[in-house]
Amino acid sequence: MPVASSSRTSRRQRRAPSSDIEEDGPSQAPPPQEDIEMDEDEEPRRAKKEKKKEKKRKQQDSDGEDVPEEEVEDVPIPELGDQPLDRSQAPKVHGMSSDWGLLRDKVHSVGYGFIREVASSVAEFTEGEKGEKALSQVDALMRELLDTEFELTAHEKVLEDVHQKLVKNEKIEGITDVYQKGVEEMLEAYKHNTARQKYAKSDQYQKFHQAIYEVQHPDAAMPPLTDLIAKGNDDDDDVQIGGVTQDYKCPLTLTILVEPLTSKLCGHSYSAAAIKEYLNNSRNIQRECPATGCKKQISLGIMESNKDLAKRAKEAERRERAREEDSGDEEVIE
Image (cartoon, rainbow, N blue to C red; front, side, top):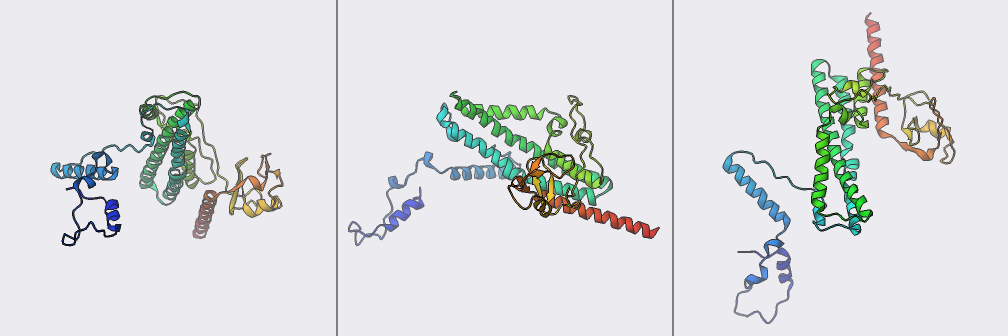
């Protein structure tokens, strides 16, 4: 028998006693059937999900095998339905597109720094065949992150394309199909790319291999990233990214960076205290960047704190001290 919802029950409990209640009757009469019936269409979506999960569990228990989970559509497009979209829906579609970008930039991208730290530690403390195997596993995780980033970008791009069409007063029929087809086509094309085509131009993948290389080959420039990725049949030879030596020294103090500030204009970094003194601690004064060969005019107003670089600078300083101690020990032994 259907049970009254909590909201209706609470409303009944708040009603004051009235003369309609018979003195010799039961203290609480059962509510009429029609007052509490709930249409199946009104059943909460959460309850429906629970029923599906329960059904799946029962099927697993009876078969003794795992049942593949249903693909749950987690995209917001169904909120718009399949009615034709016009310019009035453009802001909502743009908001959906921005949500995917926010998910990628603020949530997903955090994982890259963690993976770089793991790779750097593995490169430093694990050697030989065991070390190579561990780095290969970390590399696979890094590529999975990049693949997921592309998928998030695909959702964002397809929705932004829809938004641009709506802004131009183009009507969109069957938005759900348009959206799903657009994402599927992008992912299918990406899936057929070679490893170089997927990762060789990725700034995050460049930083990942840089973190490993500077541990294994201190003071040496990393070769082009394409040299570290196996060549596929469809790869060109003109993609060259690499040859970078990470310098953790401030161009003003010539010592390891301390609380580094990075110029948003030219990308050079400086120890906070040194660059503030160089610019007279004023946000308005502009002077030429002190990095060798850079002619950009910089000011404190275009500086931003670089915590990731600060962490890597400390690690580089620690590794340098460790190498000096090892070198000193070898001299004593001789």
